[in-house]
Image (cartoon, rainbow over all chains, first blue to last red; front, side, top):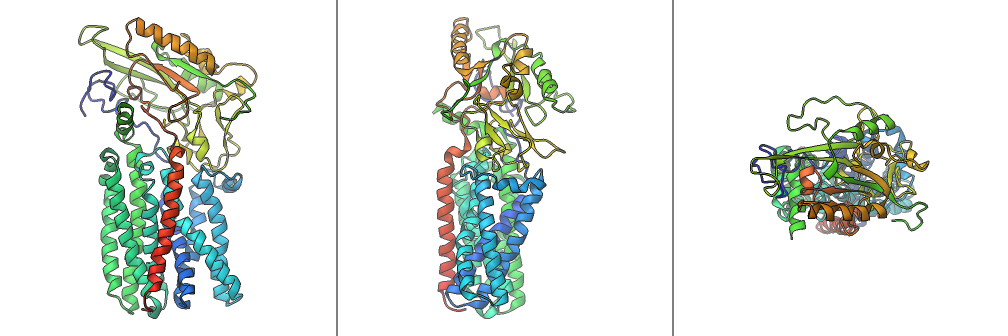
Length: 306
Length: 264
């Protein structure tokens, strides 16, 4: 770190201070724990699987639709548990539904999950029971629409903070999560579904992974280099690299799997692991960004000067 | 801001040019509000060993040791800048706007306060605050910050920190009055050969709509650990929601393309 003269607006001017107030962060670190990136994964898997289930029903693929509904139901069971565990006062989780507040993506997400979960649950249950096919169709459609939003609102959840690496990526994070969740839904359906109907699942997995990687590239490219550093260094960069290679390996395995289930399971598992790594990369980038006073100060200072 | 204020909007004017770094405000705040103690060692950088604002520190005195501007003293001289930081009680408060439970609310005085019986410790307000003020208390799970002594001002008193301040560096009162007093003070300091004197947070056109606690500083805000151009994160929320909607549509399109192909 280099010292700067007093009044130049970058530091206290003392030797070894770094930027700002003795190089200390301006922002507090987020207090969220590993449950949050895991939820970003399970919520996305559930939501995108419901979209795939609706697509499977509409195109006459009952086996594919059933597999996707089961994946969605699994994600739906786990997601609220993860969110409640992460609270500082878990017993007060119901306070989330005390108000309706559009400026709080977390509040909107709580309402969304409260509407989506019964729809996804009903779709899976009616399918398993073979009962009320028409109601099942309505459940599939509702879960599909709500699920698509459940998949992408989480990008806004992170972006609606003062953390530069999240906030400045607000236009791109929903697309990263949409692509990643599509890959997960395709992978899960390829694992769980009947191989003869797995074609769409494989195609969705590959296209979703490609979309996720393209959105990540766009995200990094649009950020101020001082802010983008959070994605290029440290644990975030390592998770991103892991996500990329797990995804490539999974995609190739799945593409060559044909109707061989073992290969489909292996490829799908690699793609699911890749999606988890992507969520942890973005989660970690937020902590790195909040802890870096330059990421907060430099772009703001440039704004004030311009 | 709400248009149905029952009281004139009140706040703090912290004139850092007369702060002597005594930390009486930190102590008075802790005593009155029963804020838990913290263990901390030497920072090794200055006389500031209490670090920063957080769940257990609602006033924090920054202590800057820096080369003096040449026009004041000879080269090689040092000067000390001291400033008592506090929650800004923003006009557009990110903590309040992102709070999913309504635990954070706007009082009749225009201040921002956490209802501790409602907060469920989701932690959303923590990274939302552009100043790094509000934080979660370890072992408690809920978030805590300055209340501008809501209990004291409700009965006509003044906050503990401003009452304890021996130099009147921290002044409490109706914001309109404090603003005019601050403008005069900046003018006087500049005439007195302090060209770096400036107000921070007194402009209602800034990114947080003006601050209920504003400051007179002698150097750039970041020197004191304050962000130079804070913006309430929710200002950009409409564009983010549009992106989420577009991404949801893109997801549906990806699935449609995948199922539109052949059966295999």
